[in-house]
Structures are given as structure tokens and as C-alpha cells.
Image (cartoon, rainbow, N blue to C red; front, side, top):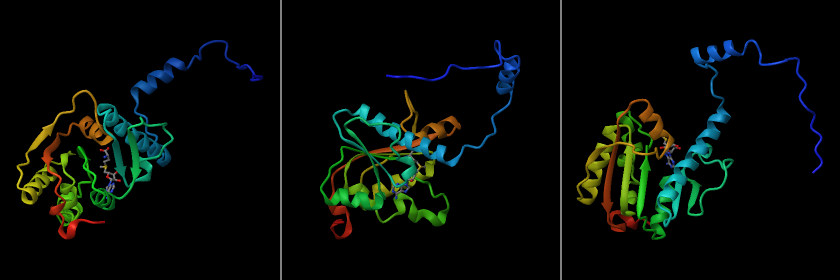
Length: 214
Ligand SMILES: C[S@@+](CC[C@H](N)C(=O)[O-])C[C@H]1O[C@@H](n2cnc3c(N)ncnc32)[C@H](O)[C@@H]1O
């Protein structure tokens, strides 16, 4: 290969005399520059990739599909995923119905830090108050919900029991060796308690009124 890059020319004869002061300043004062939007979007896509990758590594014999409707969370500039992992941009309200209609039977199903919609008037936007709930439950498998809002998980547990008759208990979630998602890491770093619910569900398309076909 022919290379012709020029060597560096500088007016410094050694380390800059101001270096120690600059380092001391960086150690003493927080950086206030706001994160620009395209960098935030790139970080979010890298984070989604990382979470899916971690699950794919944890379950090497399973196909792992990570779904989010946000494009910025799913960009692909960060490199390939393992062969058993796939990121999909989709609205879960539709995606879940297609999955059920096609007869898939997920072994595990994670709902990781869904939007809380904390205002009482927004119950219908939380998964437990949304008309899609029967489809989520009908898919079956080991369903795990994680949230930093205890009431969200409590409501979901009540809804699971009402719909299936199965007991569902809320428990604290203590991240062990690694964080599964960026929001998990963020909430934990902020000192918030994390909550989860795990329930083994039968595949039960009969839960869905009208048969659940998409
Ligand atoms: C609080 S963030 C959590 C993101 C990620 N699961 C995590 O734990 O880091 C909630 C995510 O849910 C996604 N979301 C909300 N409603 C959705 C829907 N109907 N279909 C797909 N994704 C949805 C949003 O785009 C957002 O990325």
C-alpha cells in the first residue's frame, strides 16, 4: 500500500505547560455540554443491540428477538449481532397479534421497563390496561416483566391473575452480574428499587376474544 501521510509538525517542545491545570479543572468541574440528539440516538441503538446481544449470549440455543417501535433504539451502525439474535422495529400491539396468529410459542417473553404512563387517566396505555393484554398472556411461556415502578408490576400481577387464575407475585429485582438493558442500568444507578414479576403461562389462544387472529 502506498502511504503518504505527513508527520506532525508542532510548536511545542514537550508536554504543554498548561496540561496539569487542564486535568485538574476536568477533575474538579462537571462537563456541562448537552448531549446532541444524534449521539443520544446512536447510544440508544447501541444499547438495544447490547441488551439483545446479552440475551442471545445467555440463551445460545434460542432465537432471541428484540422489539421496539423506536428507530433510534434499533440503528445498526454498531455491528452485527450473534446469529441467534434479531432486532425488529415494530409496534408491539401489532407484532404480538401476528406472532400469536402464526402459532409461535415463545419459551421466554420479557417486558423490560415499559413506558409507565403514570397518570391515572393513562391506565389504558399501560400493558395491563390495554386491549392487547389477552394476546400478551395467550402467547404463553415464561413471562417476565421488569419496571422501576412497583405499582405497574402490582397492577400487571392483578391482571394476570384475573385473566388466567394463576398466582403472580411482585418481587424486587436485584441485578446480579450485569444489567440487561440501559434503562435497568439507569434506574439502578439512580438508586431506584427495581421490581419484577415472573409467571409461567400456558399457551392459551382461547383467552383472546374473537380468536386473536391478526
Ligand atoms: C422506558 S423505554 C425502555 C427501553 C428498553 N426496553 C430498556 O429497558 O432499556 C420504553 C420503550 O418502549 C418502547 N415502546 C413503547 N410502546 C411501544 C410499542 N407499542 N411497541 C414497541 N415499542 C414500544 C419505546 O419506544 C421505548 O423505547
